[in-house]
Length: 303
Image 1 (spheres, rainbow, N blue to C red):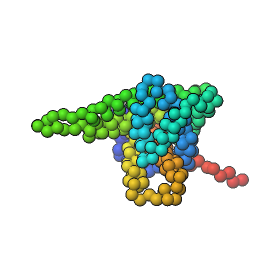
Image 2: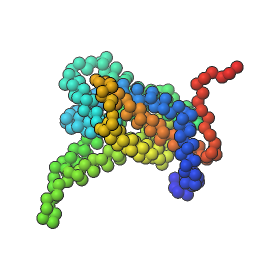
Image 3: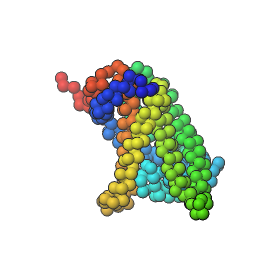
Image 4: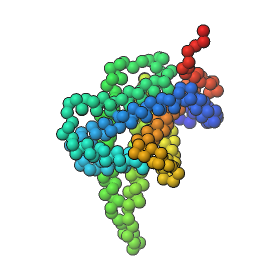
């Protein structure tokens, strides 16, 4: 895909029209409703998934380093409320002897729920692909567990790189007779690592979840779009919860769960919207850019 691609040219000629069509298609596909379902099951899945990841990876790296990495990047999902999640995770790990076969199977089941629901939501967004080709049910059944395995490998790599960057932050260099700390450079590199990991993660979701083989360039379009929108949203959430929010007065002890669920729903909505961008980009060749999307009807037809 290049700037000479006719689809790219049409978008550059009508950028506002393409953005409006994508929003209308997202609304017609009940994007916010789908995002709510993904967020709910992600909330059920996140703790079992983290427990399994830490138990498995603690055989290769220090458990405390893993928890620090998880807390750092949980801030990207639940701004300002990652500490309670990591505290609960640490509490379970201190009593890991209770992890029997039944509990292990239960956690495997719950940790895969979000991926299953996300796959179904992507089927709605990429309905034109599902109409042409359907995925074998065994592939859909095994896909979440394969993805969990590769997420664990990714977490292992990120933990190693993060530890190295934190070590750099503790150093300093002598330049022009002055001692310059590398803490800011380390912080910047950690942030860029997080953004790069976010783009890679979202791109991989767009490559794997929709039915059929999606090109890397198309998946990257969705990954970059969703990452940019989430970074803007995340910083707004940090500012809102730090200055204006009174959610703790309203929900009390439920504050963390409410904020995590809200953050997950916003993240899921942007994830699905990135998929909608890819879907509309794919349909440019076969449908006019000004053709309105057909909404999903939930009411019974009139007879």
